[in-house]
Length: 486
Image (cartoon, rainbow, N blue to C red; front, side, top):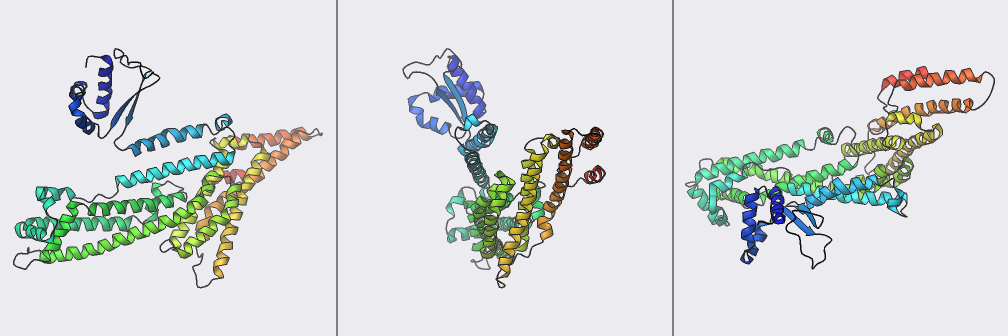
């Protein structure tokens, strides 16, 4: 272990496994023996440190007297390789792709549509991988499961039949009382989650002030994963031992049953209701995820397209929503569809702002050519018009089927924010149309025009110096100054 290269590798390994240099070096010395290959494989379970030779001929030996160099690549993989892949995608690959979007040379002959499709696919893979990892990590952790191992110890593996559970009741009445208390805790825990987790107001806080429609898919996916985590825990040997023991209480005679026998009956009756709620909640989440996933491809333009592209995609999206609303078993309530439409509206507003500004500060709007800006502003207005037209078109189609589900949603709640945004956009169209007119007049040479042009420029500069966020439609100070501007 005297070679600098080996010492350096041992130091790298110590960072991965949390061991001191001397400890790693001594372990590696022992594991170098041919007879210890199996032990080496066991030792490498979990986080892995990888050392790869690079740029060397197969026959060329490694310079052990050099600690590190260009001939050796070092990497680390976590115990769960999916976490490493997720970190690589979200932290390295996707940001790298985003940075090359403006570099035409990096994309070769790909057009804008192909670039958008590729980036959307990569993001979808990354999102799906993130969902999978969340599912593996679980959600609700049933409290007190570790007590079961402590109460039963090595006997836990022996109890796999009714007769064995009965022997627990007969020999350990105190254990039965502990198990009954555990199930009461689990019942309260699951009931509380199932009751509180459907609160949309609280759930939307997780996703920020203006959640988009994809958060609806994420919400039900998370709920399904957390419920799955509960059912997986209930399949464990510890949980099976708890319920097996309590059910055994109902089978033994009164002479050997604990004094709390009736309490156990009540606890199991309550748990049966909880199990029904778990099954129903899982079926609901699974069904909602299935139907919402069919909408995802129609929602993609809301995130990646321009307002004109979104306008073109709305007929298919609204028709798909209508179909889900009429045939879904659970996702067919006024509250849920209103919530979905509201999130779609949020995303359209976000998209319009990004279309007008990109990643620039709102002040940059003043530096955009008025003709170009007005065209973009009108595209945003058109999107709102098409959105409401398609909504009412599908509403009328459902009215023709009086026995079916109807689009009886609050239009104020769905379209209210977009209408407010468009009122601001109309004012901007009017304002920048005025700017364009005066710029055109400034290019002309008429007697008496100079004073008018100077006056108009002064008014515009005064308005601009007030530093309003032109797209913040909740800012009432802009509206007051706009009246003065006119």
